[in-house]
Image (cartoon, rainbow, N blue to C red; front, side, top):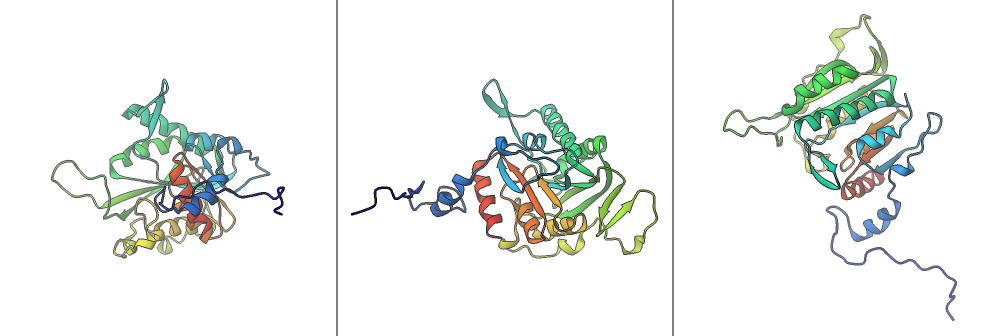
Amino acid sequence: MADSTKETFNPLFTNPLEAVGGMTISDLNRYLPALRDEKEIKMTIHQMEEGLFLTDGLSGLEKLPDSSIDLVVTDPPASPIKNSGGKTQPMTLQDYYQWNEKWLEQTSRVLKSTGSIYLICSWRYSGMYHALLSNYFNIQSRITWKNNTAKDQPRLGIWKNVLSDIWFATKTNEFMFNQKKVLGGSASDKKSNPTNFWADIIESTIVEDNKLGKNKPEQILNRIINMSSFKLNWIVDPFMESGCVGVVSKKTGRRFIGFESNQDQLLLAMKRIDQT
C-alpha cells in the first residue's frame, strides 16, 4: 500500500516546448521557485549576501548599505519604461536624464571610498553620461572598443558606427587599479599602464560562446573586473539582463549581486551563473 504521507513533487511545467529562450522546462521547474524580489534584499554592511533579484536597478541599489560595494559594472537600458497612473510608457529624454541621475546617485552612495564604476554605453548617450558621472564621481578615463554589432546606427546613410564607449569613474581619487591602490596626485610608472583604446580586442573574433549580453566579448568584462577588483570583492550590476557580469565575476572569484526587472532575463541569468 502506498504511503499517503509521502510528499510528492509536482513540476511547474510539463510542456516540452521552451517557454523562455535558452531555458528548458526542466530549467524553469528548477529556477522559478528560487526567484527572489526586492523585499528579500535585507543586507547590512556586516552581513552581505550574493544573489540575483527581480527588481529594477534603482530599487535594488536603494536596498544596499552605504559603502558596501567595490565595483559596479553595467550597461544601462537605452529605453527604460516608466509607470504613470498604472500605465507603462517610454521615458522622455528629460525623464531618462532624471532616472539616470537617481541610480547614479545611489551607486555613489553604495560604493566604497576606493570603489569604481564602469558604465558601458553607445555613442548616442556617451556625452550625457560624461556629464552625469561628473556630478557624483571622479571621471578617470573613457575607454573605446570596436563593436561591429552596435545597434545605435545613424538614421541617415552616413558613417557606420562600429565603436562603443566605457566610462571609468571612481568615488574618490584613491581607488584600486591593476592590483594596487592608486593615490590621487601621486606619480606612477605611466609607461606600463594599459591604454584606453583596446586595440587587442578590436581584431579578436567573438565566437558565439563568448558573447555575453548585447554582444559584449567576455574579454572586455574580464579586463575590467581583473583591473579594478580583487578576489572576493563585491560587484554589482544594476541592469543585469542575462547575467554577463555575474558570469565573469564568478569565473574570477568575485562576489556578485545583480538586479533585473525582466523575469525571463533573470531566469536565464540564474541558469548561466549557476552553470559557470
